[in-house]
Length: 241
Image (cartoon, rainbow, N blue to C red):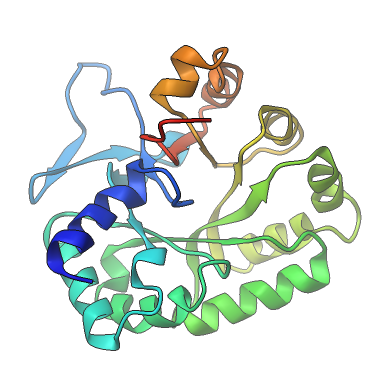
């Protein structure tokens, strides 16, 4: 991957279609001013949690199948440009394995988000432990249910023996700081917002779908904002639903 392609991918981590990663989308503070700029990168609070995050995130999929040196260089340049939000998931091939060592020198100054597609407690615990090991960290700043699409997913994670049992215990043990979820379905997103006090939601808030696809995302945005959840936008520049 050359430098130009990498920089495109960095922006894509927060704004382009095809990457299940995110950028923070928030209104300015009450005075209409940005909360913080670092190395030219605006930072805004993640909902009621208040963590100050760069508005463009680094999608861990960027380092999938890259060399160790390239991964280290991409992370270093991103940090130098003011990016402090890093997002990754087991679903992104060997991205966790590559991102862990590259991010380690900057871990204390970065916000690391990870996800799991596991729905039951036993498998979710295995996934959490493995992700912590690969990413060479003792905690995640945000841990998320990944790709919540069907109501069946919602029912499974919230049922006795579901993944949320692991999430709650992990937060109590200090292995995760914030809890969230990603979703591509308004129905699933609204159900989760109603049934658990999540810190954030990762959702395809998108100009096209918002204005030209029947207002897709409006109800989710309003429900999440009412609970002062952090709003993370994925596929923010996708041209189609």
